[in-house]
Image (cartoon, rainbow, N blue to C red):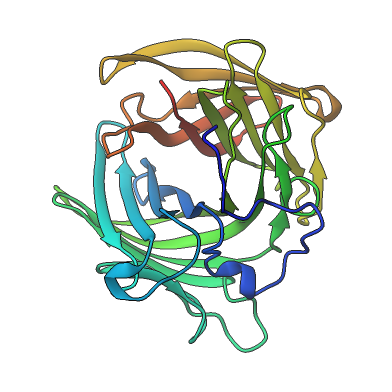
Length: 327
């Protein structure tokens, strides 16, 4: 809710343009490249992986060297049924330590963490990615191949976040097939699964009365998908999202259409955090229960939050990811 004086604001007339919008938008204050993956080992064990690069600006624009106002932060995590491994990297813009480049395909990095395009001629730059990160007690390398289109969230990529009109530019690639390896304390684990990439940028995404959000990305067994969020404000909150058909056709949700009810909480990092949810969406006959794979999936990073994979049961079965901030 802080003022965004001097920064660009999302424009509902903006038309998403690729590959340009895969890159950074330094006129805006905040931005992220956010990938989550629901994975399974050969023995049937479920895992989750996260790779995120955040850009935050002290002032609009690029600048040279250490004079750049751009700050970068990377988060990586692997979640198992019994453990949650987390690492964080911090960098200053302008010195090559972190950034996003479109000069040779697409590349996002911070230190040795990489999100690198391997797309072929004529493919979207995000159609194929190689992803890698490493922390003190874990690491991973994943190859991602999209078998569906990019999806604009909200109204053509203009995603409203409050009744007061706060908004972001937002699109996703929710159709990745993932293969690769997790490196865990007990050894390497070959995995396969699905992944979802979110791209979002804004300068003032929350209203002054909004204290945090609950965000859901769900992939159902019939091929449909759902992105939904609730922004908490001490009252009913503001909810919205997108229903995505199996062929990638998006159907923006009216504010308030998605209902999210916490059913069970767990004590996590000295907080009471919802780890079982009921989601309903009447127009789609959706009535599902989301249960965290590991209730202790706490991101003990500079800005702490909960992030982890969930299992989905009820009217639609599937898997997904849950992120919760402000608890």
